[in-house]
Each structure stands twice: as C-alpha cells, then as structure tokens.
Amino acid sequence: MQLIIKRFGELTLEELYEILKIRVDVFVVEQKCPYPEIDGLDKDAYHLILRDENGIAAYLRVLKAGTKFAEPSLGRILTARRGEGLGAEIVRRGIEFIREKFGGGKIKIEAQVYARGFYEKLGFKQCSEPFWDDGIEHIEMIFE
Picture 1 (tube, rainbow, N blue to C red):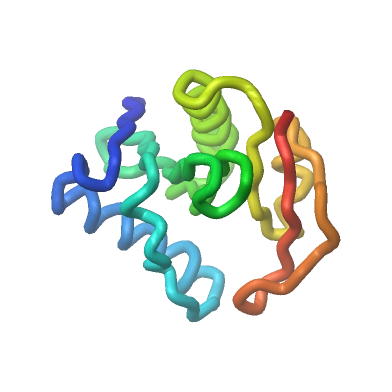
Picture 2 (picture 1 turned 90 degrees about the horizontal axis):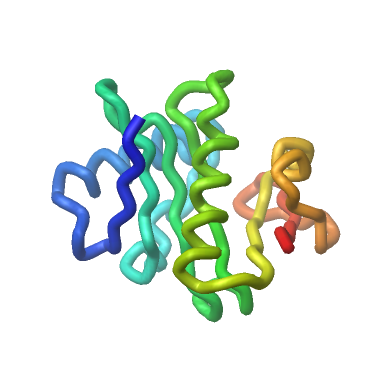
C-alpha cells in the first residue's frame, strides 16, 4: 500500500478523475445524497491517497487552519473497501501529516453521527450537538 500526498495542482488528470469519481460514488450515489460534492475547497487542500494495485483504497483531504474551521481539518474521508482497516489507517496518516506539516494543536472533523464510535476509537471527541447537513445527521469532533 502506497501513501501519496499531493496538492491540487500536483494531481494528474487521471488522479483527479479517480478521486472525484470515488467521492461521488461514496458520498452521492452510495449514500443517496445529492449535494455539491465539488465544493471549491479542493484547490486549497492536501489530498492523501492510499493506493494499491487496484487503485484508490482510501482517501481524505486535509485543509489548513482557517479554511473550513479555525483548526486544521480532515474531510471527505472514505475507503473503497470496508472491513480492512483502511479507514483507520488513512485517518491516522492524516493526523500524522497535519502534525508534521502544521505542528501540534487540535484537528477538527465533521462526522456523520453513525460513525461517531469509529472516530472516538481514533481519539476524536464530539464537540457539537448533532446537526443536519445535506440530509444526513452530522456532529463536529475534535482530536487533541
């Protein structure tokens, strides 16, 4: 499994296509949630891709502090295959990347409520009341 970290302008057209396709497949099609997946934040993000011989196995994007939240954040977290620990691995890699790139401090995410336990096992704590976003209940969570 290879970890690839690139800024938007460093992505090849093939990589960008593959990222957008898997994000739409998971967040729009699989979750039956029509919303603007391309939200204008990708150009300011670092894109972390776990890739193997089958393509993207897991993905997330990192936003620096002040982009979406006051803290650096992880978002668009997904895995192509469930039950292999890839979600936890990409989140840990994202945390490590933020620590190396931006130093210590808090990291914020918006998580779907059903995934709260997953993120709690990785050290995140709920820091907001539940709210609805694009028809799915979410919470904000902090990693310290």
